[in-house]
Image (cartoon, rainbow, N blue to C red):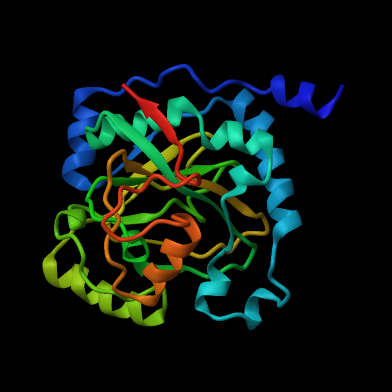
Length: 277
């Protein structure tokens, strides 16, 4: 069988995942939600190994986990895999996932901001508290990340922990993922009295969705198995580009919105429209 035939035989991921009004309202109030079996086991068996093999091929770490800084210990992070594999492109640009993102945010259409494989190695460290959107030069509160394990995740490894309702505050500070962000934002969360929610064990194909401003963290990986997770970041179609106010945002503007400038609508070739009602 040729490569094109293998790709064409992968599941289409176009059937809809129907959300209830209660699920949508819960997401909008809390800033996060767990949805079971967003992808079926057959679908994960088709796409999971392709993504895992690509991450292995592109892994840039050349030091043991113990010798890296906090960010490096947290995960192997590979972005925009959809550009590097036609099979992964089918997964990342899937209409089913994009429609869930649009429905949860209450918007008519969404574009990709970028994807990220986040593989936490055996012995990998925790992911400190942070807000994703401090990295993104996007002038909107309509951003969302799908976080989907490609393998079963035990309660010992767990899903992320979310500070419920923290997305309503918006931009808290500019601190990137670090020991400092973990200390400072942990104190902030406790001071504000945000409820901390974790969903525990997840099956492959389950997914959490969280808003760009939702504070979240993740535990380390004390097991002998890789925690394989694929994420896709969406933004509402029509999102203006913000004037980047940090090195992180300037870097993101160059990387994920190439050729675009502040004030323009985010719509570079790297930001395809993936769902429109």
